[in-house]
Structures are given as structure tokens and as C-alpha cells.
Image 1 (cartoon, helix red, strand yellow):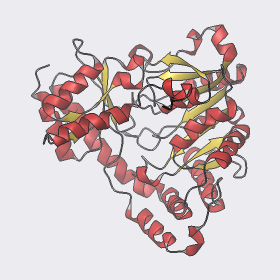
Image 2 (cartoon, helix red, strand yellow; image 1 turned 120 degrees about the horizontal axis):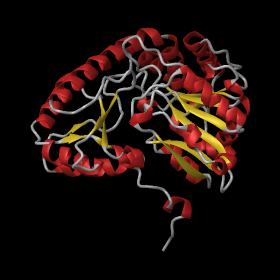
Image 3 (spheres, one colour; image 1 turned 135 degrees about the horizontal axis):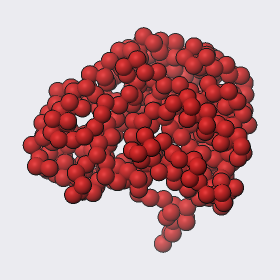
Image 4 (cartoon, helix red, strand yellow; image 1 turned 135 degrees about the vertical axis):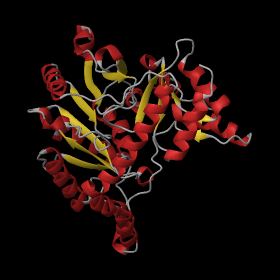
Length: 387
């Protein structure tokens, strides 16, 4: 009776929705499923953050509509964090915007700057919302393959001139989901120069900056000279502090981009519940203390799984950042086929690489979001499958 709008029919199936359906089917059959497919931390939110929320939620002052741009105190805490962590100075009134999770901002930004027919440059494989946000705005995605031979970096020199002329935005994400690749300062400098030369809004997803190991400290693209003239950067407290369900993040950078995104927010949604913002202030205040403990847990998990998977015949290196492993699979399988075999024969959920984009074919992504005992069990189950 009712036909879906064309913008909906253009969307690819949302990867994690399909996964949930398959997992539920296995659970109904009585299978003990170990889910390593979705990047939802199993670690609890640090106690001090929870306590600050508990106190704030009892205060009636926090029960009203919040400002859509964010509480002044939360915005100030974001600015202080950027200054301490990256030595980046931000104007709190014009260069920071609170978000109901980074996903909201990523999805809404194209609505502010993309007209039908405009091109958005998107690295692939990548977080699916870069593409869906583009399609909702009527834009046309142009995918830049991330391949092992280029260290999972996009080759900007390969983009045809006619594509660059129509491009209005470019999406980057380092440390990267799903490949776990990290970017150099030189790469960011080249990309900022590319964006400035071609009048392109450079959008950087910095969600995984605080999940890094072996003395590696990811940088913000806003550290690059002149970056604020062309860049907007997104961050979230979800991964850093195990706060995925809290829905709290922010955007920072170019004031025109922040203003445009703010206009979309003010017409579509509201601000973050103030008690959650107060918890966010506590999180940013304690970021070194809380984050070191969380990183150590993921480091141990990374080391265990990489070793055990290597012993099982997989070829992979230890990633410097994120809590993902990007694993090449046997050539006789497709990504979906291998992921389905792991689910049906081992009860282990992983994400097929092509679900993040065509260049992800030949890989699976494994999330280190189970405790060590369950990870070891998952690795042993995988080892028992004849490759």
C-alpha cells in the first residue's frame, strides 16, 4: 500500500541488522554463540563516571530540555581535553558542538552541505553511515579503496579530475574501522592540502583515538596547520569509556561546518540529556586515569588473539590501535561465506569485510569485545575448523 521513498530503496542492507537476525536464529537453536562481530565494549563504564551521572539525574534542574549545542560546562570540558590531548585550541562558541553520539553528527552533516548530485568521497571499507548519510542527502558516493598495498590509505592522486570538481566532502577515519590502520602526520598534511586546494570539506572520524597500544598516540587532524579552515572532526565517548549506550559525542573544527551541522540538529533533534553531559565532563576530566586501564585490557586481548590466530594459520599483525582485528581469509571463501561458516560450525560471530564496502572482500573483522576466557574459547573453536 505504501511505497518506500527512493532514498530508502537506494540504501544497502544495514550490516549489523542482518547479523542480529542470524545470531538470534542460532541462539534459538541452543547454540552458545560468542559474538565478536559488533564493536560494543563489554567493559563497564568507569565507576566515577556512573556515580556522577547518578548524582546528576536526581537534580530536577537536569530534567528539562537541554540546549541542542551542549551545556557550556561540557563544551568547555571538550575544549580543555583537545588542548591537553592534542595541543589544539578551540573556540567553544563556534568550533565545538555536542552530539547524541558521533553517529548522529556523521549522518546529519551531509544534509547541511550536500545538494542532489554532489559527490562525497568515502574511503572503503568504512563505517556504513558515511555512505547512508550521503544517500539521504541526495549525494553520490565515490569510493576510495583502502587496500593492503597502500597500508589501507586512500590514493588521492587516483581520483579523476571530473570527480574532484564535483566533490564537496571527503570522509576519513584514523585509527580506522574496520582495518585498524593508522595515519601519519604526513598523510594528514597531504590530505588537508588536497581539501584546501579543491574546496572540499574534510570530515575526520576520530572515534578510536584513545584505544591505542605500544606507546602509539594517534593525532587529531586538527593538529595540522590550517586544518580548521577545511576540517571538521568527530569524536565519541562510546569506545574510550565504554559508554556506547549513553549516546554522547561531539564535533569540533571548522566554524562553518559546525554552524551548518548545528542548524540541522536544531531542526531535527535535541540536545543530550544534561545528566549524561555531566557524566561526560567527568569522563573527559579523568581520561588518562580511566583510559589507561581500559587500554591495557584491550592490549592483552589483542596479544592473545593475534598469537592464537597466527598459530591457526591466519596471517595478521598486531594493530597499533582500535579493538578490531582485520583478518585475511582463505582464498577459497568469500567474506560472507567464511563468516557464515564460523557462525554455523563454531558458534563464533565475526563481521564479513565486504559488509563495510567492496574492497573489504577477502577479510573478516573481529572485535575484541569479550573477556579473555571467551576470546580463547572462540580462538580454539576457530582452530578446530578445517581451513
